[in-house]
Structure formats: structure tokens, C-alpha cells
Image 1 (cartoon, rainbow, N blue to C red):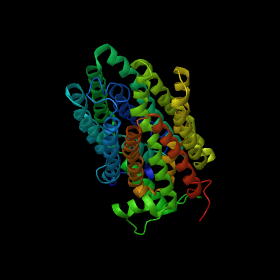
Image 2: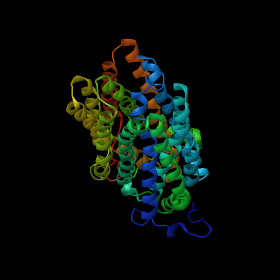
Image 3: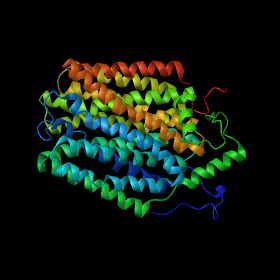
Image 4: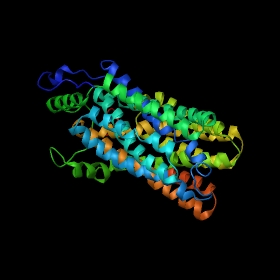
Length: 438
């Protein structure tokens, strides 16, 4: 792991921003986020589908089943918040390294765990890992690139991560069939984690100096035309002040945070209930893996064009359209039958996620000054990933109390559409070239 240029030896003006100028580190971070996605993706098919037969979850205990997603969401949300502040003090590369070291016990817990409690413990560590590592891959890329590339950067980052999630869901489904669920997940997970650690040491470089250089240039020359950064009351805002600005004081950021929270309801149901629903409908692990993968692949691959699209047409319309499409896709899943129907429903939800997901992150980056961009992104991701916890808890309770899994699908559809309406009423366009001046 190499440090970036230090301030005493390299003047801010000597650091170039842009994807092409920093292509080596940009590619490294794309590979890193793919390995982050693979690590979480290995839990998306086998673990929920075999929760009853392999890990001892009683049949019909939907709330207990969802505990691993609840634990993941609350822990990852908290770690996103911590990661943002830590990265501005320790540096992006050190936080990335810590996140991967924390992941090392996860495959061992899955391999040897005698009960569901061990799986929940593994997902607690997974939440810590994801909060630290995924946050850093995005923040580091934003450090290196220009303001007019935020949509492109977010799109490529989420494409790499969620394409890997989808591929891991398929690969681990087949590995579980060939080697057994525990050994298959162990081999896959440990390989991804060790590869990521090796790359951090061999290829990683600290990118915090680029963020400081951008801040220094903006202080000297002023923000680009059309930019409307969120304003803190202090010149150097502390953690609580930044949290207040992002969470509720700036209505634009509040609208983005609530949208982020509710969109995770959709990902929570895909993660935990799609495999259960499809397994009960008679699909094998391989076929379940493909349905889940279609959702992830459409989401991941489509972000290659949806991210740059928001750089051209603006952020607000793609987010609202994506929220509605994703909600409709989830709501359609239990109202048809057969592989073609379920695959089409998953694809529609994936397309909706592709429109909204990188665009929400780009919108937050539009509004956050470089000096506390890492913190702002961490706080947004805190609220966004709490959606896993709140969503999984609500979905488990609704399904268990009603005795009908279909009601959970309707809950997600309604929450996504309601959140889109709130964003339409409260949110504003944030892309600098289109944003209305105050």
C-alpha cells in the first residue's frame, strides 16, 4: 500500500483530477468494489434458501430469518457513518485495509457455525466490512475524478459492485450443489477476501491528497458555476453538525437520505425473501441464483449508462422513475408464475435500481463540499443502509403476523412509490449545470 503525494512535496495544483489521469488507481478501486460485492453476494442464494434445512431456522419464522439482514443493515449503516469520518483522519487506504482484515473470520463462521446465531454473527462482521470497504472504493474514486464525472463514477462503481453480487449469487449456488453449502461458501468467500487484501498492499494508493487539493483549488477560485454546496454554520464543521446538515437541515439532502433508506427495502426483500419464495415454488438453488442474478446483473450493467445519463439530463427524474419502476417490479413478483415471469419482474426491479442508485450517490456528491464529502457520503450511506435493518424488520413482521409472504412484496412496492412522491415534492435538481440558483 503506497501513500499518495504528501502536502510538503507536492503542491495541490500538481495533482490532476479525472478518470483518465488516474486510470490505474481508478481500475484498482473498481476491482476492489467487485470483490466487496462478491463477499456480500455469496450470502444471497444459499443462506436464505437453506436457512431451515441447513441452519436451523424454524419454518414460518420470517422475523428470525430476517435477523441476518437486520443485523447487516444496522451495522453497515453505522459503519458507513464511522468510515466517512475515519477516512478524513486516517486516509481512505487505511480504512479499506481495516475493512478487509475484519472480513477474514466470515467464511470460518459460515463453515463451522452450528446454528443460525453464527450466521447472524458472520453478517455483523459482513456489515462492518461492507460499511468500511464499499464506502472507501466510492470515496476514493470521487477524490480522483472531476465534478462533471460524478454520475459516471457512481455508475461504474455500482456496476462493478452489483455485477459481482449477481455473479456471486449464481456461482455460490452451483458451488453449494457441488461441494455442499458450507464448504462452497467458505472457499468462495476466503478467496475473495485474500485477493482484496493482496491488492490493497500491492496496488493501493492513498487518495486523500486529491480531495485536499480539490478543496484548496475551490477555496482559491470559488465553486464551479451552478454548484450549490450544502452550507454548514462552521468553517470546519464537526461530526454532529455535518450529520445535522445532511440528515435534515438541508432539505435536498434530507430528500435523498429518505429515498436511500426506502430503496433498501427492495434490496432486503430480494436478498432474504426472493430465495425463500422461489424455493417454496419449486425452483432449485441454481435457478434461484439466476433469478436473483438477473436482478443484480440488470442493475449492475445498466448503471454503465444510467450514471453518465444523470450527468447529461440531471439527477431528479431518473431517481423518481427508478423508485417507481423498482416498486412495480417487486409488487409484480408474486402475481405471476414461472421462470419467465419471475425473471422479468426481477429485471424490472433491477432497471429501477440502476436508475436511482448511482444517481442518489451522485446527487449527494453534488451537494457536499470536498472538505467533508467523505463524511457527507458516509452519513447518506448510514441512512441508506439502515433501510436494510428497518426494511427487513418490517418485512419479517408483516409476513409472520399475516402468515402471507405476498404482503411483504406489497409493503415494499407501496414504500418505494410513497418515497418517490416525497422526493418529487421536497427534492430539487442537484446537477451543477441544471440546478436552480438560490
